[in-house]
Length: 291
Image (cartoon, rainbow, N blue to C red; front, side, top):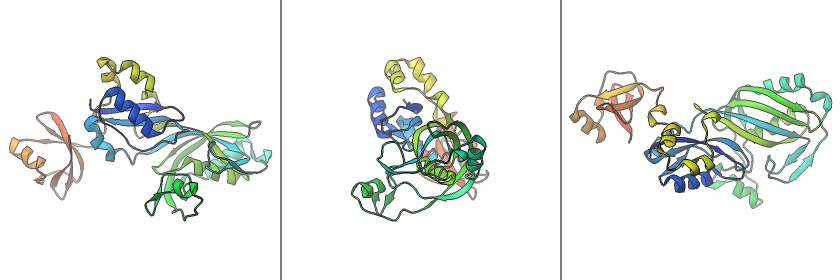
């Protein structure tokens, strides 16, 4: 059982929880391409079988989220899981559609972001949340991220909540973005809800639930319809076909093949079957991932 299955992760499960559950249900090797916070929901691509070898092609994908900001309160974790550590008045004049949309637009583009202290980023070999739990203060390195699109979805003045949709680069912390948006509105805030609706080409519409997998783990037709083939991972990369058994053997053994194709990453085929991927540089093609 090889390929990718898109799971709609429910709340209160870690990404590793989902990996372990699916591994037991489908009785195959399973991996994921990046964690999703336990209190977040949505798209979690899982790699099955030899598909786990393709993880490096998926970890840098852009993402799309729908998030809810609760204004007027700041928490220790920047989400609803933490303790409230600060409250601040919300200027209702600033909480109007036009004003909020104007603030959101200021976040489009490349920028530096300081990740939340409760995150899995490692500093000196230790995760930030481990420092936070032990009460130790550590310098958090800034990172460059990019917001491609951001728009207002809904505004609830009574609840002092903003729902927005954002398309962003890998490494963007939506919890930090929520705090930064609140600050520009003139108050504090935290991420109340988060739903990841897209990772690269994988959308929430293609996602299945844990219950779906449990109910259909022995249903070959359902599995065929919902497990994405590995060719789709490299679908945007050109195809290269190895012509002879001799070339095939040399390629498998790590010998570079002399080719007349542009530099880049290729889907490699032999006898009409995908055998993996290869990287061409200076007219030399070398194996990258072999299935």
